[in-house]
Image (cartoon, rainbow, N blue to C red; front, top):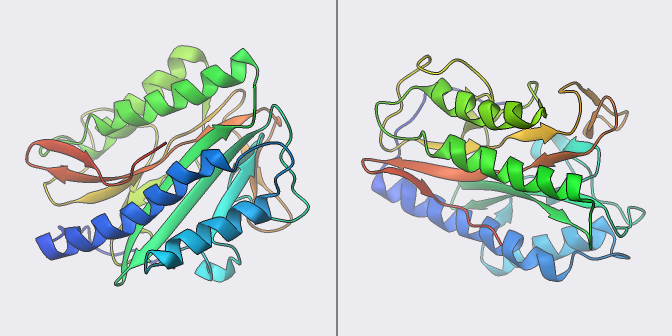
Amino acid sequence: MNRGAVTIKSAEEITKMRKAASMVSTVLTRMPEHIKPGVSTYELDQLAEKWIREAGGKPAFKGYLGYKASICTSINHEVVHGIPSKDRILQEGDIIGVDCGAIWEAYYGDGAYTFAVGKVSPEVQQLLERTQRGLLTGVEQMHPGKRLFDIGAAISAVADQYGYGVVREYVGHGIGTKLHEDPQVPNFGVAGTGMRLKAGMILAIEPMFNLGTHEVELQKDGWTVVTKDHKFSAHFEHTVLITENGPELLTKWP
């Protein structure tokens, strides 16, 4: 990952990132119409790239460190970075995490949403709802003067309430002219510690909650991360601007 100093974005930079984030929002809000049993993850990837390019942007993930698709599609026990394929066909009762990034005039937006495919079990539906809640609870901490690990502590408190595993190897991050900038934003930590948050920072916050253990492992394809116990995992992400008045979501969900 390319990292450097934590940056405060100018008004012009924020405008560009709003545009990039809006492309991500378009993809995530249009996805539900197409996510259904019998659809391949390749088809979803093709749609996402089409929508981003029609808006004048570029898919941020395509070509990043050699990744070949425009979105990540992670099914069931796949945590993040699942690769779209014509052979991956959605089934009733699956869940699929769609992670999307877009570039507008060299600035990035990043977001993710885990969708249910048809009807899922009550246990899995709760996992989806509680992971969303974990993200939004963390985002509520993003006020100037708060500490970085206030975010992770708030997120992990939600997971701990329900006995979920919080993935530790993959975390949120700063974002701007690079997809991954400083600081890293873990989904755990001790409240009241870490750097102070400032207005103008833009961070991508992305908890991953597992039904079982927090432990994950990388598949042989070099990208797909799965839960070690093969229990389901959910992933949600927003690109968030810290303003003087608190957090502002630059990405939108369905």
